[in-house]
Each structure stands twice: as structure tokens, then as C-alpha cells.
Length: 152
Image: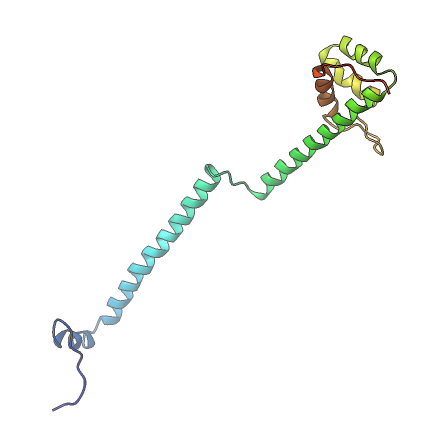
């Protein structure tokens, strides 16, 4: 009589004995691992690809280059808005501001940008060139203004 321990399962001691003596048990185990982990890897890869497609397509994700371009556009717009505020304030504080505003009203709409740029109102202190886009914003603000600029 042998004192070796033989595990007992719900199916009886024969199942464990058959597993030990099965010549292809390593192959069976490897195929099980490949099936389980292969499915997991395929799911993760497909899920990752779907996440990227949905994120960039509908989620509003952008690449670094697009984000940089958007930031540069926003910065240029902010500079133009700042220079336009300076332009309007400079015209209001000009002693001949009413006469210049009257001249601006008589200039055609398409020529107002050149009129403001030539007047030097969109060139900030310390700069030699006018701020790009500021003359257009300044002319819009001046034309939308309901009260005349104050002198002094």
C-alpha cells in the first residue's frame, strides 16, 4: 500500500491521475494561456484604438502642433484687442480727437484701417510697427461708439 497523497476531486481520483500522465498537457496549458491572454491583448488594443479614434474625432483632442497654432492665434488676437483699446483711448485723449473721428467717419469702410494705421494709433509705445489686426478692431470699436470722445 502506498502512502502517497492522491488528490480527490468531485469527479474522483482518476481525473488528477489522467492529467499527470497526459503527454500534451503543456500544449493544452499553452493554448489556454494564448486564448485567454490573446483575447485580452486584442481587446486592449482594439479598445485603445477606439479610444484614440473617438477622442480625436469627437472628443476635441488635438495634437501638440495644433494646440500651438491655436495658442498663437489666440495670442495674436489678444494683442490686437489690447492695441485696439490703446488706439481708442489715444484717440479720445487727443485734443483733435473729434476732428479725427469726423475724418474717420467720412473715409470709406475699406480704407479706415489704413487711415488708423497711418495715424499711428495702433503702434504701441516702444514698438516701431503697428500691431497686426489692431486697426480693424479699433475702427469697429470707434464706429460702434455712441458718444463722441472727450477732449483731455
